[in-house]
Amino acid sequence: MSFESKLRDTQETLRKQGIDGWLLYDFHRNNSLAVEFLEIPADTMLTRRLLYWIPAQGEPVRVVHKVDSTVLNHLPGEKYAYSSWQEYEKKVEDLLKDAKKVAMEYSPRNRIPYVSKVDAGTIDMVRDCGVEVVTSAAFLQRHTSVLDEGQMRSHFEAAEVVSGAVEKAWVMIGQSLKKGQSINEYQVQQFIMDEFRSNGCVWEGDPIVAVNEHSADPHFAPTPNNSREIKEGDFILIDLWCKKNEERAVYADITRVGVAAASPTERQKEIFSIVKQARDEALDLVRQRFSNGASLMGWEVDQKTREVITASGYDEFFTHRTGHSIDRDLHGTGAHIDNLETQDQREVLEATCFSVEPGIYLPDEFGVRLELDVLIGADRTVSVTGGEQKEIRCLL
Image 1 (cartoon, one colour):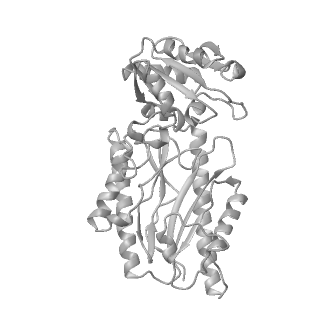
Image 2 (cartoon, helix red, strand yellow; image 1 turned 180 degrees about the horizontal axis):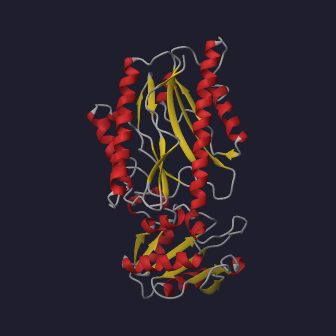
Image 3 (tube, rainbow, N blue to C red; image 1 turned 180 degrees about the vertical axis):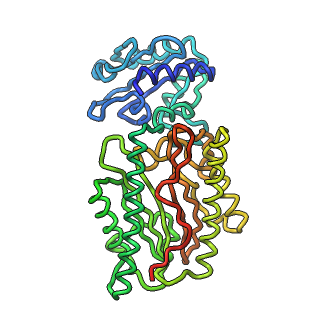
C-alpha cells in the first residue's frame, strides 16, 4: 500500500471514529510504530524530536528540527522546521488549537504496552493544549501488522522450515537413544539452528529444547553450562521459530512435545489432552467468527483457552497469555491473544497472523505447551500453519 493510500485510509478512519487527528511523535526511534508507519529508512539518522500531524481533514504537517530537516522529506504535507524548544512547543499548540480529540501511540493505564510508545511528558504537553489523548492502537495495526501476499507466502515457507526442523530433531533424538549415544538439550538446539541456516532463515533468540522439569519453565534456554542429557523416559518440549532471510519476511513459531519412550505416562496424557482441548476450542472460536463475518478481539480467544484449563483445575499453572501477533517481528504489532497479562481489546484483522499456544506447567515435573500459528486470509479464510499436534510424539 502506498503512503498516499495509507493516508487516505487513516483520515477516513479518524473521521468515522470522531478523532480530530493523529499526532505521530518520535525521538531517537523510541516510537518504532511511528517510524514504521512513516516509512523512515533504517539508515536515516534521527537525533531530534519530530512530529507528523495527520488531521481528519486536510493536509498533513511535518515538524522537524533544523538539524534533521530532511528526515520527513519523502512524505507529503507542509513542512515546519524549528530550532528552539519554545518554537517546538508553540508549533504543537498551533497544530492542536482546533482539536478536541487526538490519537497517539498511548495506551490508557498501559493496558496494551506494545503500543505505549510516547513518553508521559509529551502526553502532558499535548493535554496542556486542551485536547483529549486517545490510543491509536485500533487503527495503527492496520498499517503495521496486515500482511501482503508476499509476506503470507514467506510465512508459509517459514512454517515448513520449523515443522521440518522439529521432525528431524525428533528423529535425531530417537536414533541417538536407540544407538546408546549421548545427546543433550543444547546439542538439539544447535541442530535446529543448523537446519534454519541451511534453509536460508534467520531468527531472534534461540530455540527452546527443555527436558522434564526444564519444560515447566516456559522460557528455559539451554546453554553449554545448563544443558541436560536426554535419557530414556524423559519428557521433551521443543519451541522453535524463524523467518526467511528476506526483506519483510514473516516469522513462523511452533511448539511440540514428545517422550523418549514407547508411550507417555497417564499423567502426561492427561495434561496434553487438556491443553489440546483448550487449543482446539480456541481454533473453533476463530473459525466460527470469521466464517460468520463477525468480529473477534484478541482477548476473547485467550478467554476461551483459559476457561477450558480453569474447568480442569489447572488455571494456576497456565501462567502466560494464549498467543501473540506475528509479523516481521516474532512478537508482532497486531492484536495479541491475551486476557491475562493485558486485555487486548483490538480486533483480530484479516490478513494477519498470530500464535495460539496454551500451556500447563507443573513445577518440578514437566510442562505442555502446544503452539501453532493461525493466518487469517484477506478473504477471511482461516489457515493453521506449521501443523497441529494431535498426540504426544513417542521416540522409542
